[in-house]
Length: 323
Picture: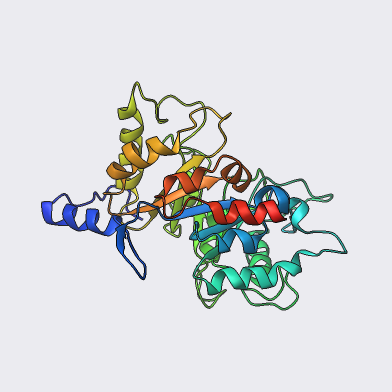
């Protein structure tokens, strides 16, 4: 994968990029501008009453991608699905989510599964088990296996939020295996969630494989060299240009935001909508916004505030109130 190719800068291409980054909402009565970005949302670490069921979240029509958080991978290639209080008991297995996942997909919403931090296996193997893990993931989540952990589903992609610390799993090889036609008929789309400082040391080897399709770059935290501040907004814009230019055109880049007001570098959605999105959405490989996570998004009404008044989030707040 090339790490140096830059986006074109001709005025005609810039005009096209701006046009494609805009949105139109057509109703029976009128045609209006729509400021709602393409939003990817991390969901699954709270209860139905706190962040909504998967069906409710998809029916809100606020999100284009849902990332199920999370899959805890062990260094023996086994894994555990952890979706908090949504499922995971004998009385409520996560296969019960099959209908909701298919409902979301039928509505045109992509559903990813996210790998988080691992825990050590009781007896770690002595050999590389990366290929075994790849096959286990394919069989469980990308093959319509009727006995999969989420039922008979084929998910739309795998997200690597953090690189688990394992001596027996080679993560660049894992994403390569998930693109290998001799292992799987159709490539598994891969997303990665690096820190906004370039490069993200842990995830950079995965990005260099050329098999990553999406970046949800986390522009929040304590690092002053890439986060947005009113005093020095150019620091953020410089970091954004670095990510989109280095990975143009092969990777679609999303602006990763926290909806939690208590996390450093939280950005008010009005600033995102009015000051940030108009500038970054002109990048040819800009994809949208990734929100961490659903609970904070619902509590703080974050995504609805990124959108115009025609989509104020009242639907999801109503269904949560009735839950």
